[in-house]
Structures are given as C-alpha cells and as structure tokens.
Image 1 (spheres, helix red, strand yellow):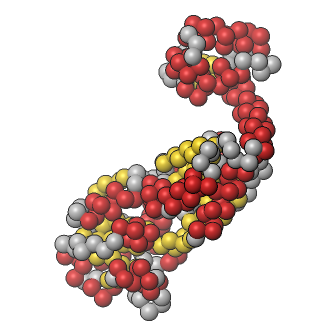
Image 2: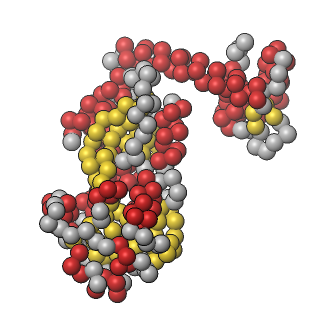
Image 3: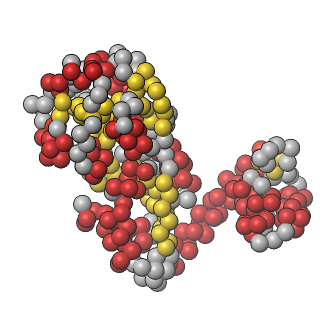
Length: 313
C-alpha cells in the first residue's frame, strides 16, 4: 500500500513535482507517472493538482500522516544502527533562535565535534514557532529555547535562566525621568540587578517613545505584550523584527526602545549609547532549556550532545 511512498512524500515536502523530481534525480514525467500509478492503485487522489502550490486532498492528508509514522519508525531503527557504531557515523539536528545559536551553542558544538568528528551536525536557525513545529515533526532532534514547550509532548534539560531587560537609546529625553532606575553593565554581569534592592522601572515613563518589538509568535514578544498590558502602556511600535540581536543593534543606533535578554549584554559587552532598566519579574524571568520529543527514540548522538551541554555549564 505504501510502495513508492518516498515519491509521494517528496512531492508533499516540496509542494512541486519539478522540485521533487530534481531531488529524487528522476525526470518530472517519470515522477508524475509514478505518483499517478500509486493513486490509481489506492483508488483515491493524494494531491489536489488544481491549487498552486500543489495541495493535498482529504485522503492525501491521511496518507501523509501514515507515511510520517512509517518514516519515524524507519528513522528510529536507523538511529539504533548508528548507535551500534559508537558514533562513528550518524547525524544530529539542533535548532535555536539566532540568540542561542550565536551565544550558547558554539562552545557546545565545538566540544561535541571534537569528541565525535564523524557525526554530521545540522544547525537550524529560525523562530520559536518553526522550531517547535520542526521538533514535533522530527526534523530536529533537540531545540534550545526559552519558551515553555508543552511538557506533555517534550522533555527538557534546564540550561540556565535569562531575564528580559529594557534597553533605551541614551539620547531619549525620557531617560532623565528614569535616572533612579538605571542599572549598570557590571550589575548585569554580576546578577546584582536581580536583587530586591534594585528598583523596578515604571514602564509608563517611556510610553511616548518609539518601541522596537519582535514579531508575533516570539516568546520575547509575548512577554513584552504582557508587561505592557499589565502596566497599561500602549507602545508606539516603530518596527517588528525577527531577531533580538537586530532589535538590540537598532536600539544602540538610537531608533527605539527594545526588550532584550540579559544574555545579549553578557556577550556583547558594555554599550555607552544605551541605558538599561530592570523590569518586573512575572514575565521577564524565564528558563533556557534544551527540548526533545517524548516517546521518540533518543539516539546516542542526542544523549551525548545533552551530556556535553550539561557538563559545560
């Protein structure tokens, strides 16, 4: 029933017969004929060819769900065989946002690659919504993020905490009113700014200034929205961006106020053209963790990667 499944699945992934044929190293007419033969044998169309890009029929959706389960079983067994080889082969796919791929993963990946040079590393850098989707679908083995993934679906290994602070261009006149709430770079490095002695910024001081937000679906954006809502501030959003580093750099160039992880400040160093402020902890404090899917075979390369990450912290 699932003979030729790899042809169907490649068309589904690429949403194009021509792209799928190229990936499979066969001609487009041959691929189209092979898929049509499968549909005839099954008695139902898998693809809706009237849409652009090509879509799935109702039957096709069920076929693909079944195909994914079969592919996951095959992958699990393939992973098991790789484990037998004591990691002299195999691969691991790791995902994270730009923040974590830039500042957290490099030393871990370096150590892993040094220890297991023949294991292929695949790093995917994208937003949180895509990371969770790719992890669920099995395209990724492990994801590092500060978003609270569903614990009924994913296991997690805690890495460290981070906190969202407010970064404001030093040239903004509103800083004069907020002078008593400024925190220094040294207080961030030492963690002293998290103590109860350091006052929390009333966000309304900057309510009339332009803000730079991340796009919907990003954890920092969701927390920024909650903080603004709780403090009854309707931010004047100048830009919505994909990456926190871009937001931070634009703040450094004076374009607007941004919500930034203290992890960035700990890595990029002191900046004299911005002021920093502590925010209330209800939504500013979060855990950075490595996530992997429950009930999926955890291959040895993933276990070793997580072990190295834990030992390096």
